[in-house]
Length: 95
Image 1 (cartoon, rainbow, N blue to C red):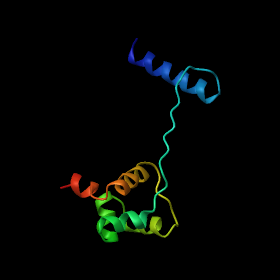
Image 2: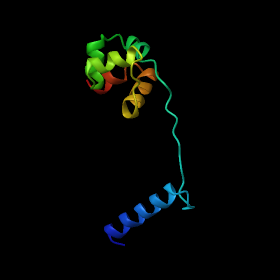
Image 3: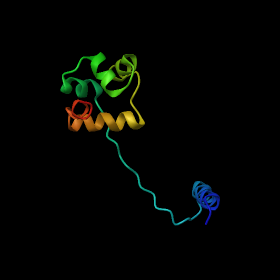
């Protein structure tokens, strides 16, 4: 099967799944816990600026998360959940 045929087949299957047709595809849902950004940052002992830099976001973004005006989503939410479990994670990996 060519790359084109493989991609086409995958797209056809995705469209069928989206339309509710039986495709035999397995669906897995991953639950990412909600996070308390201020508590996570506090557990690292870092200032807001240092913590924001360490996870690659703007300080304003971090402030919005901490004050509840916004919520982290996607990769940021996953990273924060990981840091919640192991506060030293970022400093260990970025040394």
